[in-house]
Image (tube, rainbow, N blue to C red):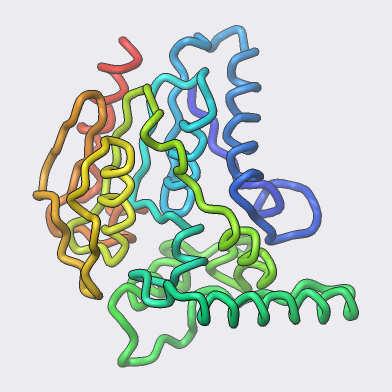
Amino acid sequence: MTLAFDPSFTGESGGETRYMTSPDLNVEDFQAAVDYLSNLGEVNPDKIAILGICGWGGMALQTACLETRIKAIIASTMYDMTRVAGNGYFDADNNKEARKNARIAINNQRTEDYKNSTYKLAGGVVDPVPEDAPQFLKDYHAYYKTPRGYHKRSLNSNGGWAIQTNGALANTRILTYANEIDMPVLIIHGEKAHSRYNSETSFDRITGETKTKDITPEPYTGVYPVGNTKIGNKELYIVEGASHVDLYDNLDKIPFDKIENFLKENLEV
């Protein structure tokens, strides 16, 4: 059995205020799913795994720092959204002044939101995308703004997150206890993905390695080899030639066999 869900306050999930998020909410979403599955008669509660994609790959790993009922974790084409919110892409804004300016803007927006009884959205994927935009923005546009991935209730296809939710993300860093994750972990990322450093640095934190101590500016070329790296029961799988969004829906790039074998091995199916 597979349970798929939209995070709280987004998509098909209920709750107000819409388009808000924070790490604690997202971990709770995963844990609530485990609560539900653990109480279904047709589910073996000792064989539950979770999988997160993109930002929810990072939140799946964060859930693994807390949740003891899950037996395996998969994070695919992941972001650590708390790091991106606080430091910018490739840690380009990782300084006190930049973070202070971001806090000022977010808190001023909170004042406006309260006054107007609305929550201003940050905007989804840029449309139209400029010709000189980075390739990953063009990739996002090709996914979220076309029938390939567009949905009328998709954040990225439309107005995006509420601006003020970036405060919660930037102020709370995930994976503090990543080195205490005991269960098997499979992290998957594309060789050509701009976001690859998120998976490689997270793999370091989980395993105690230090290969990604210093990341390089864009384009990030990676420090782990294409293919599989395994340390204990933790694996990092870099998919040859794949971009970030390839691992959303490109059936020729998503390593289904790798995922299936990982789950069979670690859930003893």
